[in-house]
Each structure stands twice: as structure tokens, then as C-alpha cells.
Amino acid sequence: MLPKSSLVILTPLCLAILLSACAHTPQYRSSCARESDKAWEELSIAKAKGFSGTVAYTKALSLLTAAKTMQTVENHDACYKDAKKAREYISQSYRGE
Image (cartoon, rainbow, N blue to C red; front, side, top):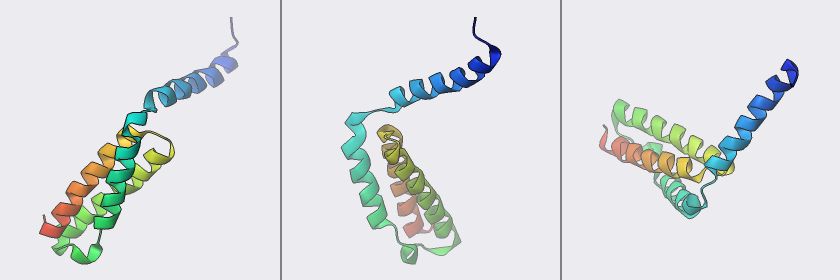
């Protein structure tokens, strides 16, 4: 039987390895890059209309930052979803919604 201190160290390590294996989704790699590049190109605070537009802009910026983080750790599925949602918020910011 392993000592309790070993379990405290091994359990999170095993969980991290398992999650990183699940997060590796190469089929979304190009979609993630393409979607986030488009979103960064579309993002413009100057086009945001009114207070609600700037709120949507802020949400989009937060999602794009998260998408970049997901891309860096090779969780391309989450990156793609965040970038796609960011583009929706960018569109809303231009309409002032």
C-alpha cells in the first residue's frame, strides 16, 4: 500500500495526464487557428456601439484570450468553441446588443 503522501502527489498527476490525453483533438487544430484569426481580425473597439456593445466586446476579448490559452495547451476543441462564441459577441458589439 502506498503512503498517504504519495497518493496526494500521484492522484493530481494521474488526473492531469488523463485530462491532457482527452484534450488532444488534432481534428480541430486548423479550425481553431482559422476561427481565432478571423475573430482577432474582426475585433475593433471603435466599431462597438454603446454600452451594451462594449460589454459584448469585453466578453469577446475574454473568450479570445481563453481560446489562445486553449490553443497553447493544444485543447483545440475548446479553442474553436471559444473563438466561435467570441465572433458572435463581436457581431453583437457592432449592433450594440
